[in-house]
Amino acid sequence: MSKGVIKTFREPALILNNEYLVVSDLHIGFEKELRDKGINVPEKSSEFSERLLNLLKTHKLKKLIIAGDLKHKVSGISLLESLVVTRNFLNLFLDLEEVHLVPGNHDGDILGLLPSKVKVHNVMGFEVNGSWISHGHARLPKEALSKDYIILGHIHPVVKITDNSGYSYTIQVWLERINKKPKVIIMPAFNNYVGYLTVNNDNFRMPALRMLNISIEDMNVTTLDGYNLGLVKDIVAQ
Image 1 (cartoon, rainbow, N blue to C red):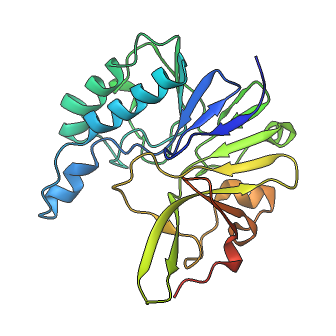
Image 2 (image 1 turned 90 degrees about the vertical axis):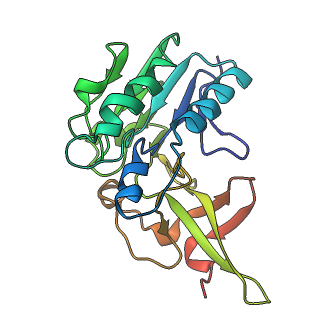
């Protein structure tokens, strides 16, 4: 079994050591918040589960890691999350060998929703074959610093790019520190309908990055299609 981290093509997911599929920020139940604001959004969890199942099948993987924010409501549990979405969503993955969750800042009170098959870890994360998986909203333990990779989610990174005609585009991206150890990867949100942080326009500091003394501005940017855009600080948002 080879070691390492591979970004999947056109999907915000990682393959870890040819064994685990890693995703972050599904925000199951986000539709309820939008509906309360008068925005009628169709239920999307079936779309997310189909994408995940396709990735697992395509890459012949039997182990799934969700790196935080499985559900959307920060405090408590909405009726949509409790009765419909989270139970039905996770039940589709119970034939896998392993299902792991590192709770994110949106995963409060989630334990009662989860099938017993799901292994819930400490919010600071856990180690998998030389990589540390965490959500990113909490500080990392010192043992994470000795790993080959630290994999985070939390901020839903995008960049804003303006072309010569004045049209602006917002693009989901990977953020990476690859020139030092541990290598650090911040994943795009698997749910591409939720809000995001425009990393080349907004100032934000993640607790996990503060401990590593990493500035988002100095991280490398790659699109989901694999195009390297350089460092965040060199991408001008107009």
